[in-house]
Image (cartoon, rainbow, N blue to C red; front, side, top):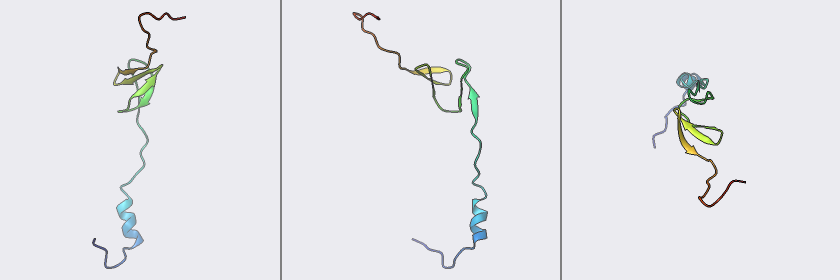
Length: 70
């Protein structure tokens, strides 16, 4: 593996790192639920997982035909 023959200065390393910036997260409001969420990520609302306004996973309790809710 290649190694530098001489040591790079601190200024040289700092120049390379100037492009790495922390950015604020972008939040959006879901048109269907009205909840705020991170962009391009699914979010949970009342036991349902939404992505782009559509239900992806529904964690509602599963009931069988012979079972009654009490």
